[in-house]
Image (cartoon, rainbow, N blue to C red):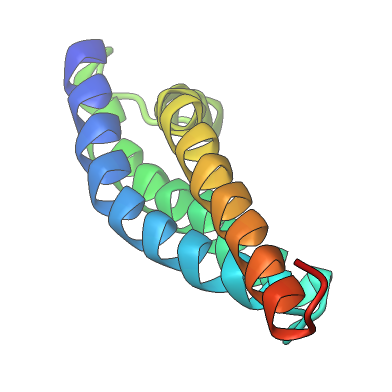
Length: 119
């Protein structure tokens, strides 16, 4: 069952990465051009990347953790399986999102400097 949880984590990470890349590019560029505050840019980019997969993992774990043992479902078992999937997911999503966010922030800052005549 651990392999199943690993595959679920990879699939959810892949689907969430699509949102993460788009949000990272858009919000990083808008932050670079000083159109949005830092808190807003981070919450739109990173909060869904952290919370949406965790909710999905909790649901998947709640349905499948009973099959791993003797059929007894405990909250700690569900949480342990969900955190296992979250670790796999975050090791992929956070670096990818950060790279695109940072690159877009840099390009947005350059666009702002060019518009103001500093470059």
